[in-house]
Length: 199
Image (cartoon, rainbow, N blue to C red):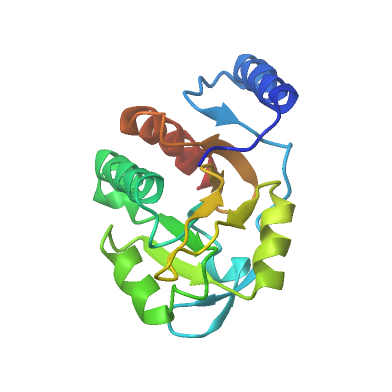
């Protein structure tokens, strides 16, 4: 499972990150994508079966991550890293953050399963999913992909998906891309800057 972004886009993000840091006087430890991606927008379903929209979480810095609860490695490791990042931020700052864990495996990730899984990482974690049309619209919006492996004899299968963590400020503007290769300290550093500029 990896962040499926072309080499030229990675280079562009890196170059723009340096340029924006120089112009804005801020040093970023992760990838600054301000102005490069669309604002947060989606229609999904929460773990209570209610339809939710991006605006329902307005006023919070939001981290968007695609995954699934049966993921054997990258998903739990990434969510654990985010939990450590929120711990590094401290309870006051972390209360202004929401982690939107979007399951791309709605067949197995029932509301009950998704709720239990997301909450295991902390109160800021919110499980969301949707129809294939809704999930594909959201993944296309942020240029990520996911696909299903062939089921084994027991019907189990893996889901290949992006490893990107998208960070949106309190107004829903795309600000950063992170992934599990960054330390929690680096992610906390950048989230703190986004939080400070969102208030």
